[in-house]
Length: 143
Image (cartoon, rainbow, N blue to C red):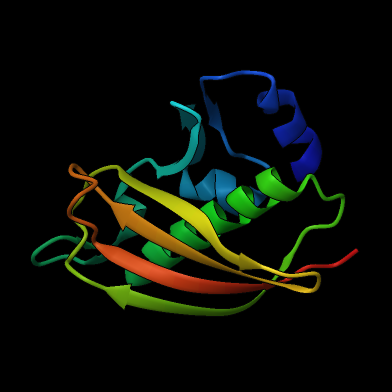
């Protein structure tokens, strides 16, 4: 399902599509965008994402899941695989509190072998030069 979704988008240089490939991604409000040849995953803000009401801040799990989805989409995009890679390990560094606004993430493949891949992802809000979190992610590549 994910590979079919991405294969439709590969022919387009620019897009902004709802990433409702699973109930979870739909509930989280994930969107997949491509601009200037780079994939970006976005999480549209809604009140259910708040983890701390005073001051209002995004729940850390929502930011981590955004970065995981961004890494997964980047890995599938690069590999053209039929099987979905499995997340093995995620290490998240929270750098600053997420404000109640839209959040974006990009991932890049750090290393890819035959069986495993390591990716780095960053999440930001209004300024890509001021990330709110970063993550190293390891995936098992299944054939």
